[in-house]
Structures are given as C-alpha cells and as structure tokens.
Image (cartoon, rainbow, N blue to C red):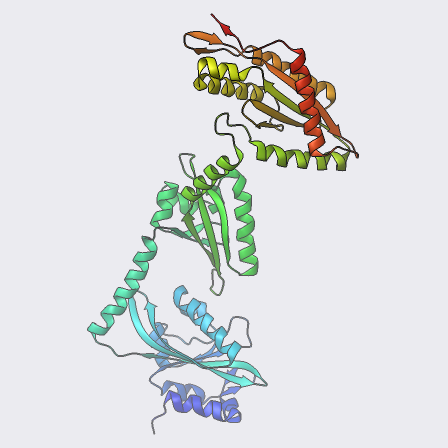
Length: 444
C-alpha cells in the first residue's frame, strides 16, 4: 500500500489522538515515524512551534535531497537549513499558519545554490488545546519543461535588474549600521566606490545636522519592527554637495541576520522650489530683507515673549528723506540702488537675531529683542550715519540720501499692543523728520 503525504497529514488532523502517536513526549518521534516519512516521495518536515525559533523535529529523505543536506535536519532552524531569502519567506508563512490556524499552500520559485526550483509548498497546522503546537510542511517539485521554466527565470532576473537599475536609491542595512547591498542609483548619488560605502556606517552619508535624526529613526524601526516613511533629510556626496532625499524604512527581522531596507527618493528639485516659494512669500525681492508679513508675525511673538519673561525689546522705524525726489530726478533704477544699499547697511548694523524688514516703498522697520533703550537708540544713530554715507552714481552724478529714525521700547507684563507700538515708533520717526532738514541731494 502506497502512503501519500495527504493520507499522513489528513490522518493526523482528523484524529488528534492518533496524531499524538507520531509526536510524543518532549518533541520526540515514535520509532515508526521516520520509516513512514521516508516512504513519501514528497519532501516532508515537522516544525516544533513551542520553541522560539521553530526548530525542525524531523524530516524525510526527500526533504534532505531537496535541501542538499545529507544528514538529519533534526533540531536545526529554518535559517540554518535554507538560504536567507527562502528562510525569510518560510518564516513569514509559518507565522500566518500559527495566527490563523489555517493551511497555506503556494507555488514558489525556490533558490537552491545557483539553480532555481519551482516548488509547491504546503504548511498545515496541528492544533492542541487551541494553539498550534506543530506544523507539518511538504515540498513537491512542480514538473515543468524548459519552456515553462524560462519565464520564471526571466521574471526573477527582471526583479533583480529592476532593483539594481531603479531610479531611486536602495540599500540593505545591518544592525551595525553598515550596508550589505547598495544599488547603482545610490552609488551614483554618493559618488563613492562601492567597497568604501559597504565599509561605512550609513549615517556618515548624511549632513551633520541630519545624522542624529537618521540614527534615531533607524533605531525606532529596529526596536519596533515597524516601517517608517516620509522623513526628509540631506544626503551629502564626496564633493560636499547636498541633495534632499525622502526616506522609507522597513524591517526584515525573521532571519538569522536581521536587516533594514532603506529607500531613497530624490526630492531636491521639490525642496528648492519650496524654498523659492517661501522666499517669495516672506522676503522683499529687491533688498532681500524680510517683508511686512514676517515683521508683523515676529512682532506678535516678541510681545508675547516680553510679557512672559518681563523683558524689553525695541522697534526701530526708518524712513528715507525725499526719496520721491531721487526717483523723479534720477529714475527708478537709482531709487532701487539706494534701497539695496540701505538694506546692506541694516544687515551690517543689526544683529542676526533681529528682524530686519522692508515694510513699504522707502520704509524699513527692525525688531530688537532683549535690548535696553540706550542700545536701541545707539544702533539707530549708527544706521542714520551710515545711510548718510551711501553714494551711488546716476546720470554721471553721485547721489546721496538721508533717513529719519524712530525708536519705541516695549516690554514688561503690561506691554502695549502691536498697533500701539508701531504707532509710537512711527510718530517718533515723523517727529525727527520734521526736525531734520536733511534731504536727498546730488553731489557733483
């Protein structure tokens, strides 16, 4: 009488008591089990699901022939018997069998050394006390001629080629942070020899600011086993140039040597476009200073901080004298040149932490945080003097300009409103303008 795999497995599932005769004690098989399994032409293996790594309790001769391992596979793990790619797939399927307590049956292309086998693989659960205690697996070669095998080989080759020549970067990173695989796109972006990349910690290829962010994200993926998407960081090349990349990370943990797959998508063009749009929305196009929108938002924030920490700040208003006369007499080109020179003066005199803005045609305003009245007035006096020193050439003549300044201090728990502070600074500026007789003049 011929014993088939189906007969053995169905007999085990239909009669749990009889199935228990094959799996006895602490995972040991009865003396009859090896002979029964070896009589089956399909590859058979039995996994012990009570152990963390699902070790193999027993396998038959056909199974040993398929794996190329001549000795008994008893007590070996799936990672020890199969190649990493195969072991990863098989472990994933056993997890499904345990979770859903259902049979899995699939036809897969199996890597065995340099050859490829088309196998029909079946995994069937043995349930005891509501839990899957063992899994019976079978492997059967699917008979096919060369015409059938060729498409499978081509499909596998296309997959490998697609990954290697993908327009986005891909690398597999071990838990030591070093990549074990890098595709062509990533190599070209980094512009470094492959051997050098494989010996380096992957975080070394990010900007100094982003290195810590990347390592933190990678550690989260390693610890949680979950994927991570949408993080955008700067990748640096051997020339020191940077490119923006959007990263996706996914974890492959059910293998002997776990690793993380990281994909890099080039978003440099989009980031540059976003940066240009931000400049248009927040920057004065002529002087490159902040615009009125930024000034208003910064003043609101400065007032809140002044109230909270009981600190003083100042608003300095600057208005050019007789600027209309310069435009009328020497043209708008001359007027634009004057405005640009004023912008340079303001950037040079005030601190990097100050908000320097052009808020109108020939009006400028500066927000100084944590500053005393004397220091703010001193800065205003310096600016007024340096603006007087500005000279541009128009129509073969040198043109100069002067400015009127207004300073308003704000701060403390009873800080004034934005409107009141701006009105006071504006009033002080016009008061100084009325007292001044300086106007834009032409110097021959």
